Length: 469
Ligand code: UDX
Image (tube, rainbow, N blue to C red):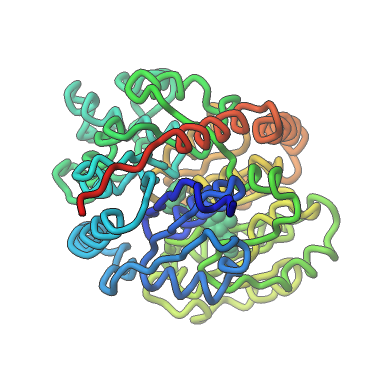
């Protein structure tokens, strides 16, 4: 009999941004290795980009369906003041009814929804369909979001004037080191009723409604915080790092989930560089820089006299043409020691022997990809979860340096020299250790390996609800 005939059918519903789509598509591929039927629901824009820039359809077997949601949901304005609430509005009026109709009319066993899309739970509850959340951020940032109501109750939020460096007392497990400036960026607002803050607080508080919570992390990295999370969500599946997990279970997989075309030529440039001599620079898929910030980073990099590979997405500079009047010394410094490009195969870049450091915005995928490859980081977080991740990298795990809330060419140049030269030995020892624990977690017998198998078994034991005819 066709193994797919009896296979569970999982509808996967990610938030429509690169970091979310990437890790949830990796999970989809891991599940389809167990012969699950998968329907992966994405916006029209993401659908087009995945078809154009990846081999997503040929990579999966016949049990995989990439399903576009109806038109009208766009990430275009997400960086604007009302961007997030506009996006949620369109998700609620367009995606939610579509999802509801889909699960009513298809033989779906369960939904795996992004942990910030609780509208999926509303749809699932109506027909008694099991739902599991996948929160694509770190355990530490999830937990700090979850504790926001307690911070408000204790009067620690909104943050008091000049209190950014005070240590907070109400995020259990982080009392010794979490400062106001390390909270998710939305907490910086004096107005706790802002739409961003309301949405994220609300969505996070919904998590215990689901049957389980999948996190892209591993026990050796975030064990103490995971124990805190388990007090409110007992069924946590830590299955990360998902990209490394996929490589373990499917060693020949070289596939990417990039929404933009990757420039492979940077790999040939890296091939010509000595081991651990290049700092890789990327601010992820959403964050933008002002022209002033761009110039500080550029001078910092050139003045550090280290080699650099810099991802300069065409829309990286907010409201500016990136090449507008760039000082000649920067052009020359870049020609001598740098390589700039629009978008790279980041996992491959971080795995390259020439890479010795990563100047990052501390997005969670980037952080995990760096940890798995043992690459120390300089953290310059921009928004949301990145502030928390950066604190953990710098202060708790001591895997690099934090330059949060500064943007100064001298600090940047000094940090790069410290990471790549002066404190290289200290960081590489710690990184090697954590990278080996990361690999152990996803190999047979490791914590993430066991948890993924448990997730697969739990989904297999679910029975689809009886549908009314
Ligand atoms: C943001 C958040 O900060 C992140 O923590 C959250 O989970 C999702 O939303 P983003 O800013 O895109 O995501 O950062 P990150 O999570 O690091 O994801 C970026 C992804 O794009 C990574 O998987 C990275 O490998 C990939 N990438 C980045 C490329 O493939 N090529 C590039 O040139 C740059």
